[in-house]
Image 1 (cartoon, rainbow, N blue to C red):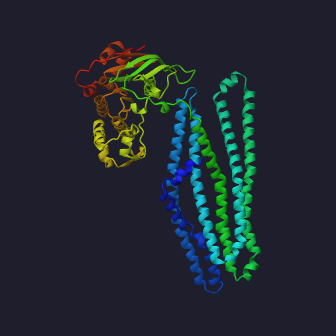
Image 2: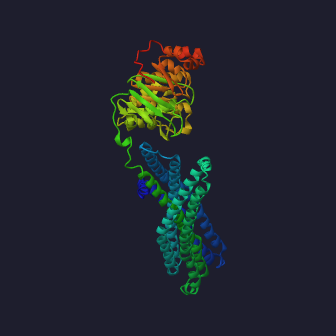
Image 3: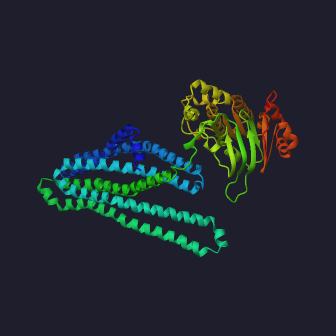
Amino acid sequence: MNRPVRRALRRDPRLLVRLGLWSVLESVPALVIGLAVARAIDDGFAAGRPVTGLAWLALLGGAWLVAALGARQVILAVAAIVEPFREDLLSRVVEGALDRSAAPGPGTESSAVARSNLQVELARDALASVITVVRSFVFTAVSVLLGLMTLIPQVLVLVLPPFVAGLVLFLLSLPALARRQRAFLLADERTAESVTAVAGGLRDIAACAAEDRVAAAVGRRVREQAGAGRALARVTAARTLSLAVGGWSPVVLVLAGAPWLLSEGAGAGVILGALVYVTQSLAPALGNLVEGLGVSGVRLWVSLDRIEESARSGEGLPRAAGSRLPATGGGAELRGVTFAYGPHAEPVVAGLDLSVPDGDHLAVVGPSGIGKSTLAGLVAGVLRPDAGEVLVAGVPADRLDPAERVLIPQEAYVFRGSLMENLTYLVQAGAQEADETAVDEAVAAVGLTGLVERLGGYRAEICSSLLSPGERQLVALARAYLTPARLIVLDEATCHLDPVAEARAEKAFARRGGTLLVIAHRPASALRARRVLVMDGTRVRLGTHEELLSSSPLYADLVGRWDPRTASAEAPSGDRPDVPSGHVA
């Protein structure tokens, strides 16, 4: 559980050094506040020298200005630590979700994934809060102790013992607080699951006259959560006691020990300065620590525990990544494949037999929502068929080494980083290195050169918000072109490009070699393909463009809506090579 935190703190030691240096500036007021007040009174106003008093107060004001600068830089340094921490946790969550979704049996519930993502955000915020409060407490406490020693060392006898006692009392209560917080979180999750199940099954509950039984079951969950909340509240009371002992009893002791301090040579200003140190710096720092660790620290512990527990639940499950198999080609074969989105839903694909030989160029057309993207997901191994099997070069698609195939969806993914990193990260995953010459060739092939020049080269930092949807698609196309994958699946991956750019990209992949499966956005893709698969519900037809014009009314209708002027501009020259048609049922 602590490993993600240790990795975040050890990732870049320079960040910790920078955080510490800026924290010193931020804690300057805690160091000088009591001393400035004491000198302003004893050496200034009480001694009849108001200018001296004002000078000490001006010094205190300057300290606050310095602290403001330090506080701003502290926030930036903390953000630089916690954002990579968040990315690590998110990767862990995604890997766990993929493990479970690849396992036989029920897949990962979307609600469970959403809860895990929420836990990641809670952990990120909690870590930021913990770093902030612990750092502030340490630097403030050291500054106050140094200030009190400078002011009058004897006062430490009155301040330090209760302060340490309150801190120890709070730290001893943390394990119980964490257990209660975890119990409350689990009870909350169970209640949410029960309420969600009820909300989604109201019709069935009413049909079965099960209202009373279901209400009783949900009521038990609610009562369990209420009990966990009360137990948490009882333990939380220890925080108040810790703050009273460590933060405010020193105030009482300083006031009670004022005669002794006066006898030790302290003036009224020194006693007031000691009280200022305690009330304005030490007690608030302890209060922030108690609140920060008591809430954010416990939340961090519980969130990390839940994330690790969720991730571990996927370990040991059969998974594609754990049994990746290489392929000797890019041909795909579907044998009696049936797929539906849910046990009671109508099949999107029913009993499909399809052979896509290695080196084929197949376009898939049909009305929106007919199942074209589903077919792409099945061939790419992203979806598992309910019946039948999907093979790529004889290997089950869901067990295929990811380096052997690439699926580009309609909304292309671009992450924050350099353009070169975005273009080559799939090549690196394939254990190959892409030199800049290969990158240049891919960029030129798919028509990305203009964007590279506009951005200022491959070192330019990009993110999704900086690029248009069409530019993101070009980046994804060049990325796929660079991979060694023999099977490329374009699921409307050029829908944001104009017809000329789309034609250029598809022709580039056709020349590249391997198997190309194109979920067509425009009928022009069918003219460029060697064969066309027409999907019409669970019925399909396979053939060349010319064959389907006469045999498929749906295909003829789709092509008939297309502007023939664009067709003549985009149609490829030359004859299409003959490819075995395969069997479709």
